[in-house]
Image (cartoon, rainbow, N blue to C red; front, side, top):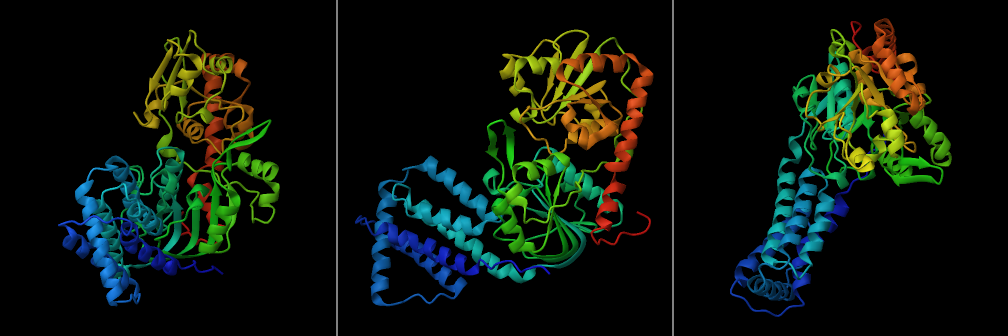
Length: 511
């Protein structure tokens, strides 16, 4: 049974009223007469009245209140005339954060930030009042449209940040297609990570999939029910949406597609990504009973080994929620034509987690000599810093400068090694290479995830392994076939559909 979400209305009422009154309380310290007093008085009155009407707050209308408001309006007007440019840059930056929060689903936070700006006497008074008016106008509009939401029924609802540039968005896109092609109706609830930008738009990899029929974006005023809700990316629930639809689900799954810390070294975890207890509390309060899944064996092992006490009371599945891929859409017609070189490819975002951390290991994994050519898609600033510049046989392609499948058609082998202290949850880029028919050479830490779909070796053996594979067409074909078979069984759309059937989703028999 799902627990209802905790109402934030009373907190929002208090915060909005405080923000509306902030201009008055902040201005009380000044005594600057101004010809703009009447206009500013009107602005302050509008703000206070709007707050009173919207929330039904009974503000006192006595003479003392009126005198205080008139006095404060005059003081604010004087400040606006005297110092219109104070802190303009800072104000614009912070005002943009308020607007992003307001329109990105975090109106309570927007109110708090607007309140802070309104109380800052070093900032232009007219701009502060305008911002408060904007916040209250948004709330008035929300009140007027609150009843316009739809009642929606879905087979699956995905809750995620649909605007990220990397593997999270690719994984979501693949699952949306799998559900749609299986005849299911899919709802998408875009949930930005507040600290990364509250108003982040939906990616152009996701937007074209939304047709309003089989794939529907869920808006804040909607009421939605689904057989299964899937939350991908725990980070989104560090700060849940404050303005969100009423969502209920018969079953809820949350996918930990990254570990709570980015690195797990000999001295312990470092660089926190998300907090287990916070996410668990927020998800339980919102959607009720739920099951945790790791995106791969590495995540599950990391949670049990490094976070045993924290996950002891969680409902944590021992089965991984693997990403899926449509092999038929990815498989290339034939390998790249041989030309005497061994073209090694590498596709990932440019982050220190994604690269070996020392020069020797880096050039062992990605050799800086003939007959090798190293082609990088995703940027190479981090290896450039490690090596003091890129070797002459490296070719760099910026992130998203070409389609992944096109990139894979230009290489012979994909080599995938990351930081020795990193805990990669899955590995979207290796999966795409396997589905395309490009052999993958990887660190042995990935073997529990990909099994016989890849070749595994140490960094010092990468060059020999890749060269031998390219020199032997039969071995190359055999590895390609092993990978395709493994991907079809473990990471295909059909594998995903089998999984959600076990969670209570009714799938048409033809899927």
